[in-house]
Length: 263
Image (cartoon, rainbow, N blue to C red; front, top):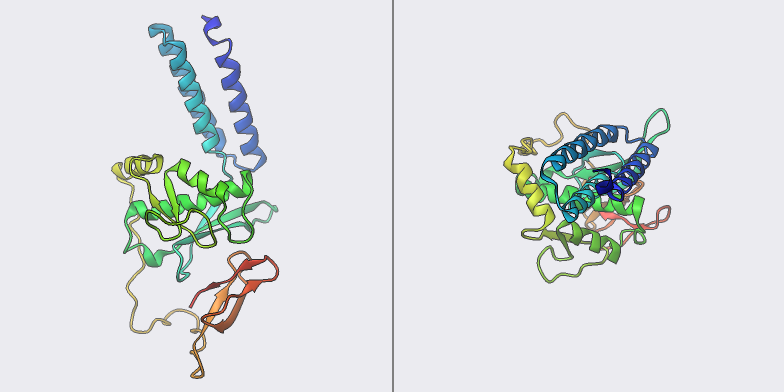
């Protein structure tokens, strides 16, 4: 019986040890629970195999499936925030937060202004889009500034999201400003469908704007001067703000990234 596992057992133990080591080194202690679940599943497979004797290729496929799930959960924890940034469904910012112990956390922001007009699956697609940026920051080589490079594009396609600068079929896969569309029948489409089929839903959406939008909020931004339209620009990394004409391109000197118009 043990001879059946002489290669699969070391392979499985190795990827579990590596996955747990990576997660613990990043402070992702919740991954211990995931590791325990994987251990129970492995024990279940061994018990069933003792009765039905799976073919070797089936055991290897199960081992590889386990490895893919293990490393799919190694992203560090991120804080999900809601930011009303015009012209954006969401964004990713690395190491945006830090606790009193000095532990840092990334930020994944979603824009609730668009929740009511988009489908649940599309909103989840934005979340996974930003998770691909988080993966690249920790496991790959991000493009300079806001550039979406080929590595990121290939990761997106492997997930089941097709990069597109137009948001539809035929758009460019790399560039400064990239959207995506869901690949029908792809991994994301299938996984999101199963999640939504279990009753998952984002039930809170942006409330309709009241007659006085500043009620209960801080004072509004200064009115647009009559001499010409000016808008506020914001750096997506350090949150630096600046006011300028609506058609200029501002670059943050600290982070060397293109600042985004927010008004």
